[in-house]
Figure 1 (cartoon, rainbow, N blue to C red):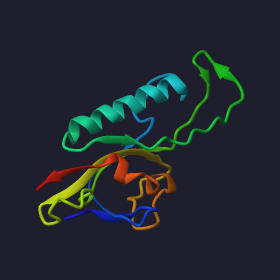
Figure 2 (tube, one colour; figure 1 turned 90 degrees about the vertical axis):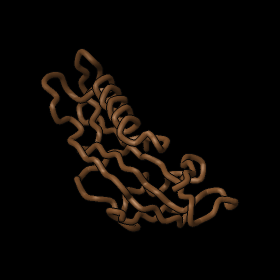
Figure 3 (tube, rainbow, N blue to C red; figure 1 turned 135 degrees about the vertical axis):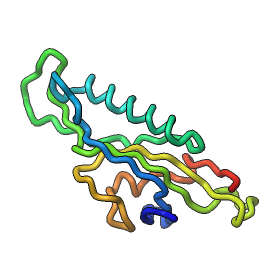
Length: 143
């Protein structure tokens, strides 16, 4: 049973099977949001997604970055990612038409950032998430 269904811009329907949300900067003890901190956070999120769901390839939707401060600190300018870091396992029908549609599905784990802790749903999903090229990135597997 899926948590929700997301419809890609291509029209393909995806079932969201598992979802993990966390505060992008939760647990940050010192420093400030900047490129080096963000890169570490993104790599950590990708690694967590790969370990949690080894059955599916992992794809990062490039996050939007804001630069609200014109002054740079010791690690460069302030660079802010959206407040919520997400990764979820999405499943859909098989990619290969030769695969039996009863026995095969396609899967992809997607990592993305969004401004709120809202579960993506239908066509009201972050545009960057809806534009994921499923046919290029997902992998078929047998049930």
